[in-house]
Image (cartoon, rainbow, N blue to C red; front, side, top):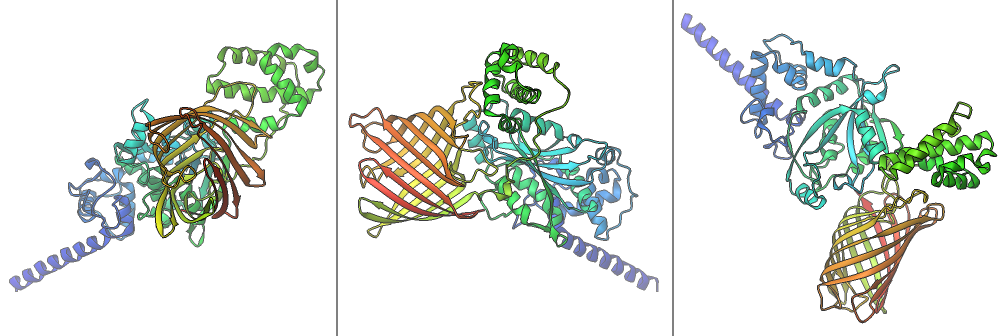
Length: 606
């Protein structure tokens, strides 16, 4: 009887362990568990996290099941494990698992999360910044909202994901290493005012905040998981495994896979916000509210718009000569005009201090403005209550496919095009740097007389004109461009091609109420160049980019090459006619030796 009872007991224990093992294997394949370990789809046999200290099991980086077993064992033995992995602990208990150790008091976690309770989550988009290759596409932050009627939102937590880049890293080195995984990366937390100050006040980038309509339990779950991964390390890839991808995956912990696509070779912040605006949660829209925070330069431009023509002229005189505040032309103005001028100049002073331009002059101007302002009644005269900037999800989508028809001296070609990302100078200005150009892998092929030609392959095409929106400061902002790739020069000759690396530098100027940009560039070329026996060439370029009507834009330029005896030149123009967020029509003209006309239909997607 005893032997029989012992056999039954052993069988029961074995059956229980087998059943527990089966349950753990099922849980190890659960999407939430796989997301908590940041395992890569579709095989889930490798984690994006590269430091082994994040995992409990030595086999954890490659085995979700082994990591789950080790996690359960650790929760049963060491109550402090709950404090290191609060999201894992909460989720496993919701799956019905029980542990031998009681709930642990996690003082550091509770102080970080609950001292000023986190009540909601927002995603932040910072507009592009052409002076830093890391921010050409804009940047994405996650914000843990703790603000209340008593506590300012600047004390919210902001969560950043970024590469660990050495100080003063060369831009080309950054792009190269960033494209091929040459940096480690990770999450960090700071109070939001640090990021708002850096982006809005130093780098002069506009911010959009998308507040999410998540339940309290899901908000807490994401916060708990952030606590788990603040020390984790990842490999950084500029094109896909970047801030947009990894922060979007945090939100997908509770909304499912709505923001990322593992089959896509790239991930851009604006793409995430476009999908975020379409995402659902509990059968409702995920985005509860969108808020805009202008940069210091955007605020100043709005202040300038409030001045009359005469007030703007007087403000310029004061900027150039602060003693003009004591002249009759200023003294005779009414109080409202005086206050408008001084308040606008104070905004300009702060902008110049940030840029560190004309330091001594700005100090004396600020002192004179303060002295004059103290003689005027209290209260502000300039109030900016709204801005015209549109949210990033309303912008043109980053990738492009096109069909075109080209005529070169009565010969017709049919063309197809593809652009990986992101925008050109005739694209919509929504949530991007106006007049700039940032294109990667821009390709065009054509069919002529049953032959297939590669017309264009621009690996990287960057332009930053950096125009001054106010002429008085004379900041001497330089315009520049960089382009690398291949082009078929069919307006020179049928077989002419360029394989080149080029760069240009110059100046740009705004006119027509800031709707028209005029630019001049000195360009240099090296490579296998059309119609020259040399590997180098140079040119002077004059052009303009302007809005003709509504959102219809024109770009025109003339480029005169200066190192050739045959007086080679090129004149070109292109008009962009938007249809909607997904389509536009382009009409372009180019003349060198021959003349070409092109009609192109562009489809934009993400």
